[in-house]
Every structure is written in C-alpha cells, then in structure tokens.
Image (cartoon, rainbow, N blue to C red; front, side, top):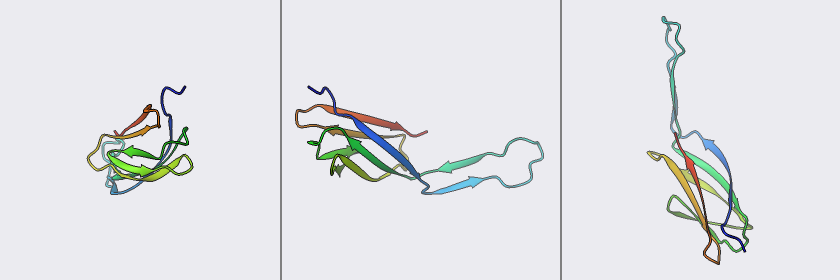
Amino acid sequence: MRTSTQIILAIVLTLGLAVFCGCGENKDNNPETFKLSVDSLDITGEVDDAEVAEVDVNGEKWTVTDKKFSGTVDTTGKDKVEIQAKDASGNTGIKTIEIK
C-alpha cells in the first residue's frame, strides 16, 4: 500500500519580467549588482500513480495525462509554488518549491 503520491518535477525558468544590471563605471572596484526578476515558471512533472487525474498547482487544477503534467505558473509576488496530488485512496503528495 502506498502512503503518499510522489511528484517528480523538472522546472524551467521562464524569464518573464526583466534583468536589470548596473553597467556604469565602477570606481570602487566592487562587483556590480543586478536584480533578476522572474514572473513565471514553466513546470513539467510526473506522478507515480496512473489513477491521479489532476494536480493542484498554487490553487489551479492541471490535468494529468499518462502520469505527466505541465503548464506555466504565475510567480509574481509569490514566495513559493505548491503542487499537490491525491490518489484514489486519498493519499496526498505535496511538493513545495521556494522562490527566493
């Protein structure tokens, strides 16, 4: 008997907003800083149970086909992405991706 549904993820960053970098003269010989802003993530995942028909990604239902799912999730203003799957027996698997 399975105690939880596993979720396997491959995450690809989709650069959504912009990359800002200081490109001026550096008089102090300090490394220049930059800010990378990503407003979405392309997520591709797989569940280990063929009976799982959908997963919940940050509150959105995504369809599972042949044990695989994929889509784009908005990460604007978010500090994590949570993916939850539940099998026919009610066992739940949760994967949380922290955004820093």
